Image 1 (cartoon, rainbow, N blue to C red):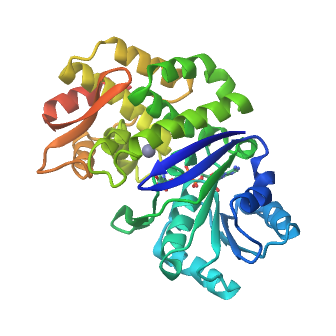
Image 2 (cartoon, rainbow, N blue to C red):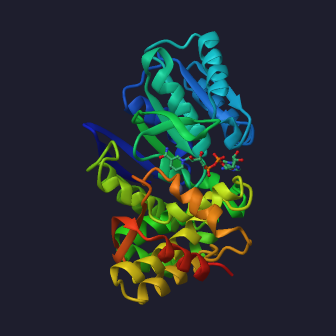
Amino acid sequence: MKTLLVDVAGHRYPIRIGQGTHQLLPQLLTENGIGKERMLMLISDSHVAPLYGLPMQASLQAAGYQVGLSVIPPGEESKKLSVVEQVIGDCLRFGLDRSSLVLALGGGVVGDLAGFVAATYMRGIPFIQLPTTLLAHDSSVGGKVGVNHALGKNFIGAFHQPLMVVFDVDVLASLPAREVVSGLAEVAKHALIWDVSFVEWLEAHAEALLALDPERMTEAIYRGCEIKSAIVSQDEKELGIRAILNYGHTIGHALEAVSAYQRYTHGEAIAIGMAGAARLSVRLLGAPEMLVHRTEQLLHRLRLPIRYTEDWPQQALLDAMKKDKKVRGGHYAFVLAKQLGQVELVRGIAEDQITQVLKEIHA
Ligand SMILES: NC(=O)c1ccc[n+]([C@@H]2O[C@H](COP(=O)([O-])OP(=O)(O)OC[C@H]3O[C@@H](n4cnc5c(N)ncnc54)[C@H](O)[C@@H]3O)[C@@H](O)[C@H]2O)c1
Ligand SMILES: [Zn+2]
């Protein structure tokens, strides 16, 4: 088991990553001074709860904890206020009080929603994150929790840092392969924006990661979390450097929006977006051509797409990009790379540069 200490906004918490870590949960709770008198509410979705939630509830109960279970339907559709209200109803009926804890067991959807429940229940109670998707390594650092509004994703939320994160790489075995690959896109992003040696490491171990090799997976999650934590700890509220975490996301979000989130997973969309951002970086920042090659090679080895194939009108993609939260005053803004491992936010980008790149990444 590897442990990373995250330090954000004066709040320090450990991320424990490894094989079989879920089984250590009762012990980890005790070690962290969480006594049996404190009630626990396990929040999960209906895919994850039967696989890992029920055994976890049983093992915590056997250790002497009182544990409630609240199960939400799977998928992004559940990330909304009405589901928050239902879960809070479960918490109230179970008798959760201000000294209780929320355990968020699931992917990014459960993490965001359960974290938001914890942030708001009785004005805020602590929570522990138990990510079960690779993508959720991303949401386990930074303290962003929240739900969607009919008018847009993640418009309702808070910053609420977890008490600890316990990542068990064994649970990735039941994750659909496409979700594993999608999660690798955010890992690749962390490498591409920050650390050339991590890019090289990912290239070397791509096959092992796709095969869910537990040691390599532990290392990849550790380094991904470490990079995100280095960035977020400098900028908890996203006023400056944190924006670089949106590398690949301007085009990525547009691809997701244009297809109503049906065609690409988030990771697939940002992989295509990173291929586009690398190309734009060569045009606008004079980054070396090699940047495009290395970016696309890494994504390709991780079985991620680097081209979009649909004949969506360019204007629809541009309009979606204009809605991106980085856009100020109608000008396009992109996170671009000066070179591999070094990126910055660039504003005021001309539309024709973007349309050229959209052509290049269209197959
Ligand atoms: N808060 C943040 O900083 C942050 C960062 C990145 C993403 N997010 C959010 O994360 C969400 C996406 O997360 P996600 O990709 O993990 O999606 P998800 O939570 O919907 O999980 C994907 C699917 O896999 C299933 N699943 C999860 N773990 C499983 C397992 N171990 N075995 C079998 N099935 C499993 C889920 O039930 C679901 O059907 C988005 O809502 C996004 O906004 C938040
Ligand atoms: Zn993302």
